[in-house]
Length: 584
Image (cartoon, rainbow, N blue to C red):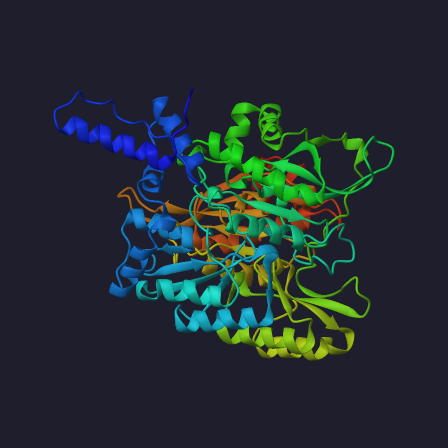
C-alpha cells in the first residue's frame, strides 16, 4: 500500500537522512524538492531551463535567491539608514513600485497602479501631497495612463509606499517582471460611442493580480489593456493582451452582442502589434482567459535572454494555434472563434478627443481634456484640478495614454467656470495639433537608459514647429530616450529615439536622435520607417519642421493624413521632399 507523506514528514525524513550521513552512514542522495506554493510555477520553469542547459539571467537568479515580497524587512532597514540599494535589491524593490534611478537621479522613482487610469478627486489631491512631502515636487503622467513620483530619498521609500496605500491606491507589481498597470478606455462609462464600459473589467483584472502571488515573477514585464471602442483609444494593440470591444452580428452561429476580440503579442518597441487571434471572449470571462494566457507565458517564456523574454517571442516560436491550444488546456474548454465577417465595423477614434470639451452620453454633461505639457504637472496644479473635479464635475479624473487628464461629468452651465479655473492654473484645454499629439518619456534627466533629454527637446520641437511649420490636422510626435521605447516612437507619425551623435573622430558625442516617419495606431496601425540617423538635438526642431512643411505642401488634398502621405511615398522621396524645404 502506497503512503503519501505530508510536507512535515518529508522534511523530517530529509533531516534524518542528512543526520545519518553526517554520523558516517551511507551518504543519501541529495533531495530533489519539488517547488511548492504560489512560486512553484516560475521556479519549475527555471528548473526546466537549467536542466535543458540554459543559463538563467541575473534577474532570474535574484528572484530565486529571495522573492522580493519576502524581503520587505530589508527595504525597511535600508530606509532607516537612508541607504541606496545594490543591483539585486534595486530589481527586487521594483516589485513594490520603487526604481532607484542613479546615476540620472540619486533617488527612487515610484510608479503607481491606477486601473483604467481612473481616480477620485481626493486621491489626485493626495498624490500632490506625496510629491511635495516625499518627492521632487512634481508628478508625471505616463504612457500607460499612470502616475510616477520622482526624486524620493531612500529614507522615504517605505513612507511613500504606505502613504499610497493610505490613499486607496497601489504600486505593487508596477515594475520588474510583473503585469503592469491595466489600461482601459479613458472615457469609459461616459463615451457616447463606446460599446462597453471597460472600468469593471480593468479593475477586476487589477485586483485579480494584486491578490494572487503566483502571478508575480513572470519571465519579463506584461501589459494588458481593455478598449471599449470609445472616442479615445487605449492603444490595446500595443499590449501583450489586447481586449477589443466588438459587436458580433446575428446569423453567424454565435449569440449576437458585445464581446472582446482577443489580440496577442503587441510590443511596438520590438516592431510588433498585437495580432488578432480569431478568438472572441465574453466580457465576464476576460479575466479568466487572461489568467490562463499568463500562466502559459510563466511556464514557457524565455528566462535566459531578457531581450526575448516577452509573449511575442513565445508566439513567434510556437505559432498561435499551439499557444491557444495550451491556453484551452488550462481553461478546460475550447475558446470561442468567429469569422471576421461576423464582426461589425468598430467605430473610429477621434484623435482630438483627449483635449478640450466634449459631450458625454449623459445629456447635459461633458468631459474636459486638460493638456499637461509632456505629462508633467505640479502639486498646485494637481490640487486645482482635483478641486475643479469636486466642484464642477462628478468628482472623478481620468488619465490617458496621451499623458493628459480628463475631468468628467461637467454640466453645460459649469463649463466656462471650469475652463477659467484650469487656465488660472497655467494649464489649457486647447492645444495646437502639434502639442495635442506630443508624447515624451522621462528622458535622461530621470532615466539612466535615455540618451537624450526628451521632455525638454519635445517642448523645443513643439515651440519651433508651431511657428515654423503649423499644421491643421492631427499629428503625433513621439520622443523616446532609448530602445525600451516607453514613448512608443514606432507608432508616431514622427518618432524620435534618443542617440549619442558623434561629432568628431575622437569619439566625442552629443545628444541627438534617429528620426522615423509613418507610424500609426488603431485603424492606421503600422511601424514607422527610419528617416534620418544621428540628428543632433539642437537640429531636431528644424528637421521635424521640414518634414511637416513637406507634408503640408505635397499632400494629395486637405483630408490626407500624415500617415497616408508618408506611406504613399518611399523613404528616398520623403527625404528629397523634406530637404527641398527651407525653414523660416
